[in-house]
Each structure stands twice: as C-alpha cells, then as structure tokens.
Amino acid sequence: MLGAQFGCDRFDLYGALYLFCSRYHSGQWSRGYRILSRLAQAGYRPGLSIQSNRFESDGQRWLYRHLVRNYKGRV
Image 1 (cartoon, rainbow, N blue to C red):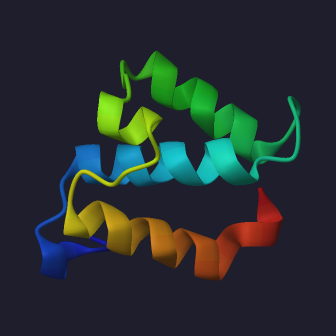
Image 2: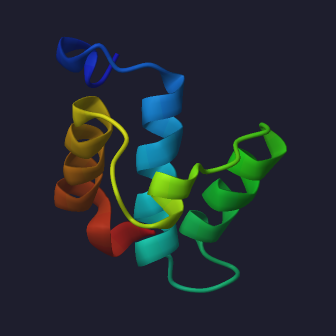
C-alpha cells in the first residue's frame, strides 16, 4: 500500500484525501468533489485537527504531499 513505510492505515489515507480534495477540487462536478462525497458515504468524519488543516500523523502528511505532487491539477 502507498505509504506503508509510515505504517499508514485507511484513516491516514482518508484524512490525506479529505485535505487534498477539499483544497484542490475544481467545483461541485469535479472528481475531487466526488471523492469527498464517497468519503462521507464511507462514514469518514474529519477530526478537529484535519478541520484545522493540521495532519494527524506523519503518514498522513506523506500521503498528502504525494497526492499534491502527483495529482494537484487533476481533481
């Protein structure tokens, strides 16, 4: 799995995706907005640190930076 060297779990991935998509989606009909909707359907509710734009773990920070580097203009 991506980020395995940091011991990332699905919540690290969900948090990184949430931050990435909420910052970089390009509107209500974009891929990033659909990902945010799917996270909500999966039951993900961001914690206070995520809502305050702070990372909850090093793995989450690494995953977020990877997403920005590789997918910034594509959501």
